[in-house]
Image (cartoon, rainbow, N blue to C red; front, side, top):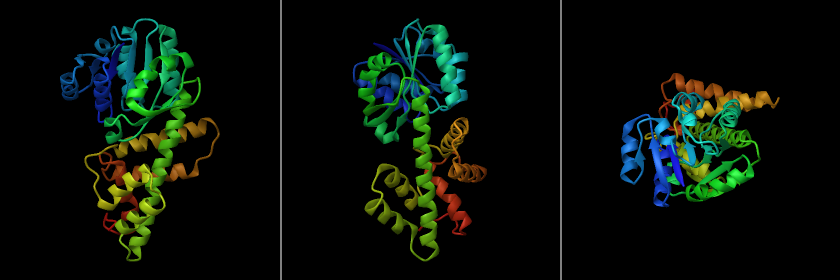
Length: 296
């Protein structure tokens, strides 16, 4: 099976390397050349354009930043057009429901098969091949790409026959992660305001009550005030909250806390923090409490 792989960022590169280690043949492309050369050293074929990476591939995996980037690469970059009829397109990025429908229609018109398979997990989880994969699409198509998912993740969760169903699950999941970061941030600011170091509170709460990855990972970063290098950029978290609100509006689902999260992300972006790790959202609560951007 030949795989075209588009997008070798912090998540995409380790995913591609794991597929190479498992014996799959990869043709890879990325907007910046450095990651392409790195993955090529692991055994991939380096490609100069998205179309080159897609040409001759049985499966095309896209792990790109957002709707706009995905549209430019897959459509304008000629990736979809370069695929043979019957090839499978696996979009593993976090995108809007509208974009998922757009891609489904485009693939149908070209005789391609489209599935969505966004992932849960940070960089270290991707490196270990322990991602949780949220998949939706035609059952027979998902069955064909399951061997790839088995390399990339510890479990594949199937959520329906329509690709966008996987995307809404991912958006709902990221909405909850954003909520966790926000509540930890406010709670740490509260204890700090009464003389209890926020780091001490976060150590307790992520050990005794919320000893799960989303809390321990982001809580640890908040406690230590370590936001670089970013495992997942705050700007991407802001994008996902916005997409979750749009999905809620489309289904007449009120999401009042989502609007609070959106505004707090905008506050952080306005302070030039979009490049930092998502845990840097905690700076908003600390600033508002007059705590000079510290939680300890």
